Picture 1 (cartoon, rainbow, N blue to C red):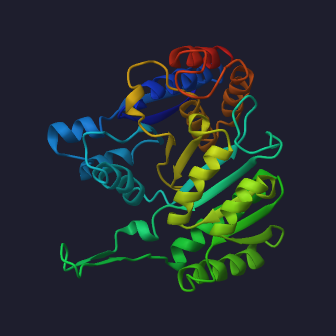
Picture 2 (cartoon, rainbow, N blue to C red):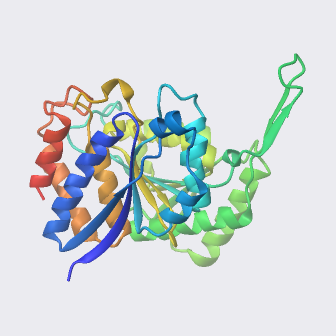
Picture 3 (cartoon, one colour):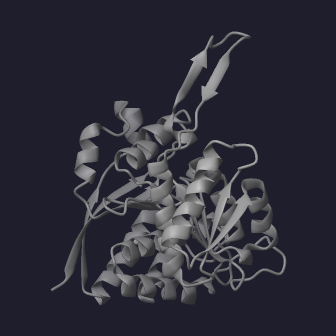
Length: 352
């Protein structure tokens, strides 16, 4: 009997619906081969809904989303909506209220993808960044004093708890062991300046690692050094763990090192609840409706979702089809792939 999963789909804005359509096409191809059944339910959260109703993400939606096995997101971001409204009102609200405390970003250079690093190939770039996703500077703690005057004061506080830090670190140690690569976990922080916040991360890192994960090599790098080594020697990294702000920054650099936004997927993980998977390239509104956007990141987000659900054979089949078909493409950039968005989806679905 086929195992059934309920998936909440949020196509979102811009090219989000186009890449989600191809991601679902590939997921259904994998499902038919591996005796899996998906029940997809669409939600219209995003810019268009906000412009029509003034509503971002109602509280009732959070309770409804908790009933699903996973969430599949296209993109959130609309040119007619002021920056920050959708990001805080939809994306951050989902992460915080659904306690998706892990942002998981695999960085893997596939063949035939453009890497800006000289003399680096797929054999050099295969690491994972784990970003704490519900604390740090993104909690919104702080405020303004004397706003709009020459004496205005802006305060933005970074909130780090031992509970939040430790559960993120434990997830990172477990994943490092599971990957069976270099068995090395690198903490990315700034202990020489951010002595309180980064100091907490460093102490917890060594205490937890020494006590419960002694076989995992513990490595440390300041965030500025991390960006340097990510460009100079990306092969040094296996798994990187870091806080919310640093993780937001270094994962975009990692995406470019790993072949670009068109092939980079991510997950917002609650190991004991509902998790959300997405391509990380954004809504790309200038390409909307042109059938030229690269859907591979969304397809790989679907692959991540299958891994999270325990359907590893189906996930591996998707990645193998991506590998077999990515070499046929002229470029990973929108409009230059040599295929349309739907044609790329067709190729990968047929290759499973």
